[in-house]
Image: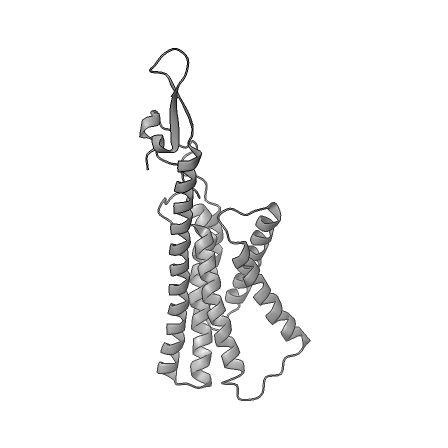
Length: 234
C-alpha cells in the first residue's frame, strides 16, 4: 500500500500545488488490522510447526533408542537442545536485525523457544514418571527448581510481544531473558560431555550479537513523499 493511501491530500494556502498530508484514520486502521491479523496467523503456524517438530524428535528418539528409559532420556536432551536454538536466535535478534533486514522479529523467535520448551517439559515429565525405574520423589529444593524454571520460561513467553504494554512488562521480559541466558552459560560451560562445552561459546556469542551497533549512524530518509510506503508496525 502506497503512502498516499494512508493519508488524505488537502490543499494548503492559495497554491493548488501545495498540499498537506493528514492521516486517513479509517484506511490506516484497516491496514494495521490486516497486518496484525496476518502476523498473528503466521506466528501461530510457526509455533505449531515448532511444537510438532519437537514431538517428531521425541518419536525419532523412541524409534532409535526404544520406548524405554534410554529413549526418554535421549528425547529429553534433544528436545532441550532444539529449543535452545530458538532461544539463541531470538536472544541475538535485536542486534542482527540492525544488519539483516530479513531477520525474524525477536518476539516470535522467543515464543517459538517457549513452544519447544513446553514440549521438552512434557518429555521430562514422561522420563521421570512413565519411564522412571523408581517412583518419583521430589523434595522441596527440586520442586522449587522445577516451579522456578517453568515460571521463568512461561513469563518469558507471556512478555515476548512486539509492543510491551508497560515498562514493567519490558523489565520482566529482560529479566527472564537474561536469567535463561545465564543458566545456559553455567550449564554448558560445565557440561559433562566436553564437546558440548563449546556450546557455551555460542551462548556468549549470542550476547555479543545482541548488542551489535547499528550499521549506519543515520537512517536513510526519503527525499520524495510520493516514493514512501506505509510505516512498519514492528
